Length: 483
Image 1 (tube, rainbow, N blue to C red):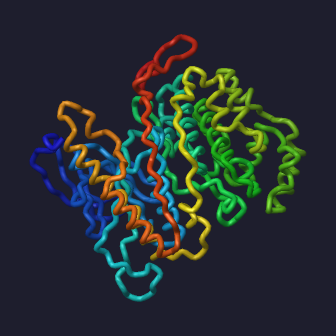
Image 2: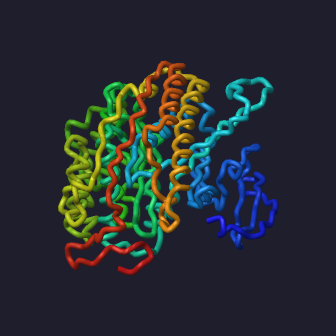
């Protein structure tokens, strides 16, 4: 890929949108720029920044080129990732989960970077000492867009598109749930998509293990999980009974949004959200009227039950233009009582997805060991202790990337996809050394880390299959193409 950029580079200086200075290059008439990072250069780390493609509450995302492999990647600058205990925990949790969760429908974390030369002064210090660099740079697979952008676009979405997207969400979620993990923030913005309709779930910063130590602690499993419009009733009413059913409600909201091309429960606050849910589903079941830790919400639920004994606009009415099987799946997912809500296995086996369902091609994994994530319920882990843990994870990714780079250079030149293959996580001597380093570092806060190996089972890419409609056997094509 070096020949693509083998042109004369013109250097300029511009101001970026937030007022920070950027280094800008012109490469083949394309803007290539380096975000200001207090002396930390992504290009020196091996990545050529190409474009700013998005931003959110936790930082900015850039498209970039891996200078060693030529592969296009996404670089997410997580601002303040190591600034406070909660931010550190979120960062460490996502790095650790993405290190053990490997699936075609989950985003792959390729590398993690952190400026090693910045002083490690405590961020809380009120002295005049130099402020440390608390930003982390995470390198992911580059995806072209997300489901929110597609839903808001004029792109026509057929029933086959909706089936294929939801099937991939459920397929990835089946793997996540098999690991005993709850994602807790499923929404269209966290579902990345390519023009060939491949979908990957991203953003595991709010994910949790489904274990008693967390389920029974109100502080650990916070009430404000998930983005409001995709929160299930049990979270809104703060019942504390948080299970994998949280994710299944979100899948129902996403399916409804795909079919309507707009959010189905856009609540302005928790009370408005509950009202909107009752308008469509009717009164909450009796067993949910007194489960909230907030008496005000319990009273409000009883008032809603009296006001909406039956739905005003039922799912059948709201989605009357949709296929009956899609409506039936919505009814199985958008259920007040989480115990009555469809599981991911039940949803995958639903007739709406019959043309795609293939249990033999839906990989799972063993549950993640509780001790590996004991940091979740430890109370007093400091920022500096989390930094040690994060550094251990960065060391692991660095070792994996060195091994992958060696394999890439040995790949046959006549294989155009050789540089696009996923890293192979085998137990090399270097990996063993890194594993030992991690264990020693984690002993600082007495957290054991078994570093399970990722499953090596491969599965056939959806894009190489013929996904056919049960009606007319027409192959599902990519976005931007007519059906």
